[in-house]
Amino acid sequence: MVPGFVAEKALGYQQIAAGGLAGSTALIIPAGTQLIKITVEAQAVRWRDDGTAPTAAVGYPLPVGQELIYTAAAMPQLRFIQQTAGAVLNAVYYG
Image (cartoon, rainbow, N blue to C red):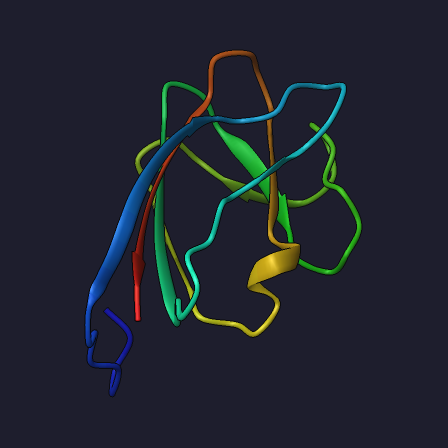
């Protein structure tokens, strides 16, 4: 977890197929979320949180099996796209 962060409550879990080349995927973030833990299965993804959709070649890469711990205020802008077909995102939400 993030140093100094104490999860008050588990708010939910989501498994979603990452978007393909035609568009990016947004998470459905529960109200009150302060921390999201995301892992990727099957294929790598790219992500952005600056209001611009990632592409298969542009965005911050997140390889299979690596965990992203996200606490920034830009949670609603967080978008993912698969680099190769078949990527799956697993997200858990804490408040």
